[in-house]
Image (spheres, chains in turn yellow, green):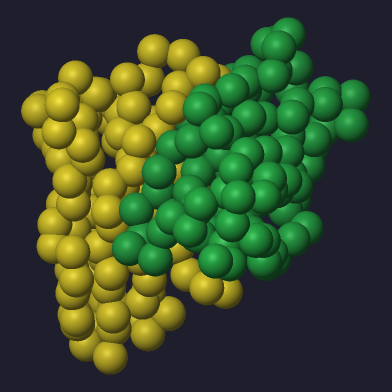
Length: 115
Length: 114
């Protein structure tokens, strides 16, 4: 079974631009979560989608948004990029049957550099 | 507030030795899950092991075992017979029954020496 895939793997943008990241979950997984990882803040939860609906959201500004399609693929968009948005963005998928027991499987991440 | 604490920012261990990575957690929820993930320099988070709060026995997966001490709120990862390929960042994480997000610790960077 193929794992979680994320595209692109690397991205360089300039301040003020916007960016869209894509995540394809493991086949059969309906939940997709997004995380931001930086050296200073560590791993921080952005949001989680299940059946095309945002089910949970972290403490990020409205510039960060996402969506999920009917095939469970998800996109994350960041508008008006700032230097501090430079990070590794990780996507994780799960079956989402049991919240506590659910193992989330991560993709390889997208490394975003904002200049 | 829910929190995961990993007190060891870095560790150096000789190859073939056993390693214990510390993790303590804080939650008032009776139902929770504890996870360990490995992150090599490539960036991908690799799931290693899971322990449920109601599980009576410690979880094991190959060379990985989780030393779960509920009263102490600790969930240490033990790697037996360490290998050079074990060099990576290791994250302890927790999920709660009322949430879908994972709470991660700051991580421990493990270096295996030949």
